[in-house]
Length: 334
Image 1 (cartoon, rainbow, N blue to C red):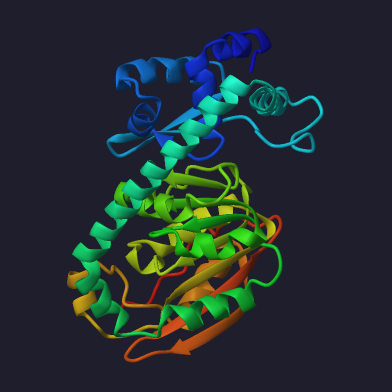
Image 2 (cartoon, rainbow, N blue to C red):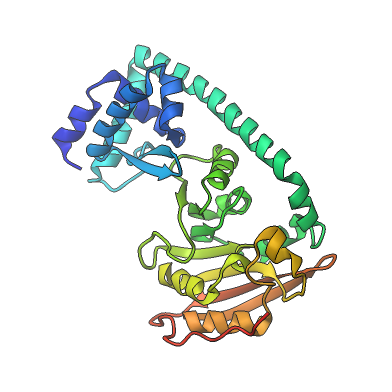
């Protein structure tokens, strides 16, 4: 980030408003236009200037483009002493406190965010209503969410550090561990599911959670980026789970933890066609082989019996200096 370029980008009332809005929550371009009362092309031009200056970041999600702040808007304790972005964030906070007219405009803008939140919630409710029958059918086969979440909390005791929630879906697991994470990244391949997760997580501080679109077989993150990886009811969608676990190991820091929540091996063949399950659960031996092959040491596991399907939780610890085996263990045909 260049100082003069950043100052030039901020030298506009609309762009100042955008930066204060992004400090509250991640927003789509259309949502920003709605709050600002300006045309989408005009808002897009402002966004380009802010992104080119390194003050904001764009992320495409299906046909939508979302914006998030690239600077820290916290207090004086946030950021390194020579972090220009954090310093600019503090200036914006101070400007709102010192300039009554700017503060009034920002307060009005934040009130309009309530309309955005309500619209997101209505969209999520509609989605759930349309898919309630198929989810109820699957849920009837296994234990309720509550005991699974309790067991997860017990197995992942203490801080989870930098958490990657793979296949976040509605964002429920990310929300559950938010108080114990230094930062949450919620990943999903589906833009529609990410919109549901965004609705659920929109009450969290803007800098505490990142939503990302991507494939669990090609994670869009640098090596050793996370302290905890969580796969909650997603590994059964993997055609090649060994490749997914190898990617998981790559982005997990040495000593970091992996948690897999999935079904024990079963014979409900209809789940392949009705719910697109590529794997009919996993045996303990299969998961242990997958973990070892990827460079994890298997740790504690737990079984939670339900109606017809058993939910299993498997955990592992990333070994230092270990990469995924060249020859992955073959899974027993299911």
